[in-house]
Image 1 (cartoon, rainbow, N blue to C red):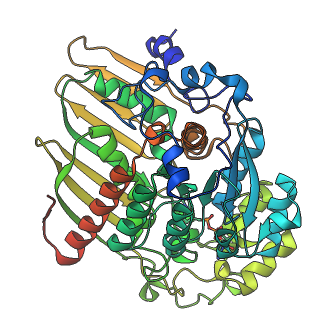
Image 2 (cartoon, rainbow, N blue to C red):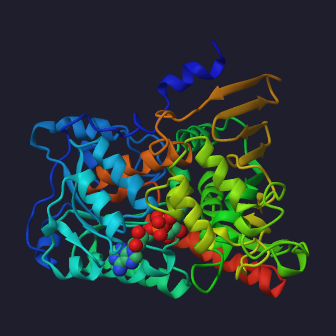
Length: 493
Ligand SMILES: NC(=O)c1ccc[n+]([C@@H]2O[C@H](COP(=O)([O-])OP(=O)(O)OC[C@H]3O[C@@H](n4cnc5c(N)ncnc54)[C@H](O)[C@@H]3O)[C@@H](O)[C@H]2O)c1
């Protein structure tokens, strides 16, 4: 037996950590919304009913035992009622989790303008026409009909629905980034705080089994004091071409800078595992390769017309053809067309954004970036985001005074300088056979588990990312972007 396996049995997993027994979730009162109703809801952490929880570490995921809480009054519980705002790629993932956990949550309404996506969601959740809305505003205008809303619209469409549903008394799970600007992020956090509604940002990396294990190890002093961290996000050449050259996150003005759109996860995660505020940041990075100047002379505007389609690394015909050939019809093919077939994908490549030559797009986000961080107390960290890799999980080295840790989402390898021993702990996410539930190394499932628990108990201490923490992570991203643009070190208060 590997040394880590013994510990691992005790370790939280995406399903086990905080998992409620089937049928064990209390329904939020379907009371009218407003200050009086808000006042009747439990406010703050329930001191007596959460054995094993540490109030000193709110939202850390360390020592949290929602199961104990939920077992206490299982008989009274009904599924949490959820409204989905946006039934695109992310909405479908969270909807899938809910469909797989019918005793814990139910989708009772969907707001989605795309007719195919709305129909797929309606079929999956068995919704009548009266529960379907073409726009989130129509849903927000109704008296509150769910306990929680999950907002998975595009980056620039987060603020208005988040504020509106918080004002209406819904618990809010909001996709990252909170918003494209610092001011808008503060507006959202102010709205959820004023209305005292449970609020989570989908910083899914916090909810993975490996993050929880890593935090346990670091908090337990396994490698002494953290001195520095080296964290790499290998986005992957095909993923980068899909999302950040041809796709939805290619332009800052329509989505957000790359560091916010993609790597806000990573700066949040670094703060989370080091467990201290950042006091200074610098950053470099640019769009270096996916620019018109690098386009081969013979390249066509669209890959299906290009003589290089069989040899170009970034050929859309090759990239999407490989997914089709493997029978993998989920992301990224489902972004091209809701029903991927050879014909529908070929049509999308001939007419849509995903068939464009990577050197003939209107992209402007960086394809590589580094960030250097100094934490309170002097620990340091470096973060590297690169398009130029194969697609694989993030890799992290944590260097401590008494040991070092390497992790990659599947394993954590701990070397102890005192004993000279190295142990490898398997932290593979459960449900790895379900591509939707295993997403982000189990983080998608872990997030849903904890958010639904938070709504059931009306207590956002179950959420590993408080509103203040999420805001601080976003402020760090904006500071890093200022540092990159102004070529200077930015000091944070
Ligand atoms: N947490 C993560 O790891 C992660 C991963 C990928 C994407 N994201 C974020 O999730 C969000 C959604 O990404 P996606 O890939 O699902 O995008 P998507 O485009 O597939 O989904 C967005 C959906 O919102 C719908 N929509 C548009 N206007 C609407 C309106 N007025 N009312 C209701 N719905 C409306 C669209 O029709 C679409 O179906 C983005 O902010 C993205 O940055 C997060």
